Length: 114
Length: 114
Image 1 (tube, chains in turn purple, yellow):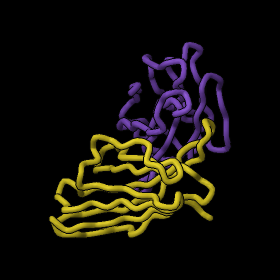
Image 2 (tube, chains in turn cyan, green):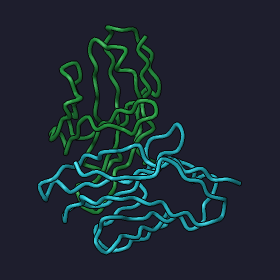
Image 3 (cartoon, helix red, strand yellow):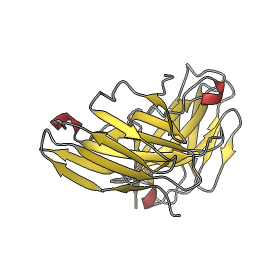
């Protein structure tokens, strides 16, 4: 399984942007980059995913480096409800010979200060 | 349909007893996954189904564990002869069989084996 490296923890202030980094230097051409987050006492929540291009949705944006060896999850204005553990995960689809399972690391614990 | 549901939310059992958990996925989702999460760790993949077929099982899924999805809708996870090491949060997720979607998690069932 491809590995990702994330900082153990980060802090931000409410209403400021947050940039959560992820390194994945061994990424293969078919790996999608996924971000999930887990709020305290809840199941993980899908945030965003992409392959090569930067992506945006209502929750966040993801910037992918040109060589795809790193990515950054961007929360445009952090709120207290964004305090969670954020996981960066690589996977490639079953249809391309991969697996649908998600391999979670320890993630980045984001603290948002009021 | 508001999301993935799991029952029960909490289960306390004595070592050696059998337990069964149920997961109801989002209705149009044909893939269903089981994960296990212990305190301070990210979720670990156990198994997944596409419709009623069990397509992948982790080596974590010992002979005491069995999962079914008989009609391609809800799924059950049974643990026989529970051990204290089985104490964990058991998470279910569902998704559509496309490359463009994420996995949507339920709230989990917390198992405590005494």
